Amino acid sequence: MDTQQIQKKYDNLAKNKYVENYEYHRWFKSSPAKTGYIMTLKAIKGHFLNGKKFKGSYFELGPGAGTWTRVMHENSEFDSLKLVDVSENMLEQAKNNLKDFNDIDYTVSNFLDYIPNKKYDVFFSSRVLEYIPDKQEAVKKIFDMLNNNGEGYLITKTPKDFINKLLKRKNSRMHQGQVKACRLKCIFKEVGFREVTEYPVTISVPVFKSNIINRLVHFILYRLPLNKLSGFLSESYAIKFKK
Image (cartoon, rainbow, N blue to C red):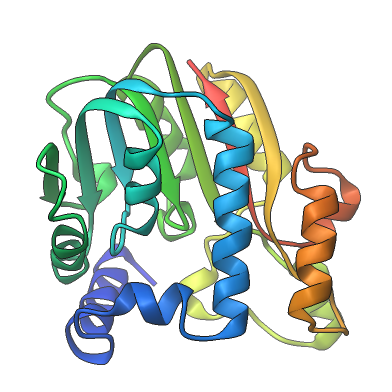
């Protein structure tokens, strides 16, 4: 799917299917959704925040309904926050959910078309990169828009090529752009980032389909850099990086 199709999909989800309540349906409605939220929250706090109070300017790509924006805002001391999302309707939900914060600027735009008017100290994005066709260009843009010593944390979906082949299933059209962690790490290094580390974010153990087992395995593995086991079990992973 191209960017325009992604935009239409999320506009429709925010405006029609999950009117004013995308965050609840995405992260809190069901037990698997809550498990995904808990894992992602632990990963962000354990890998990136880790007791650190970020300061300066913050840029988030694809905030959706503002779920992780709130976490980053409440655990940091930013002077300003910039949120860019391709979906206008989703960004409206973010504005509503984050209405208690008055230091946030919102822009509707395709990331590759967006022209920043300043540089940022912190970059964050969750589950967006897989929708961007040119990964090299996207990472280069992140590099260019960060200040020297700027830091970032990017979460994206893990390709399941082996499992899909084993089960004779195909990725949906929406998820054709997933990229392997080793390849993405190479792109970040090629562009010029340093201290590039991969981590598991959400874990899904095949066969059992148990939220309890998933959370237990996640608790054991999530603090360690991505390895063969956590890479195989991860449903999503993160790249942590510094300019």
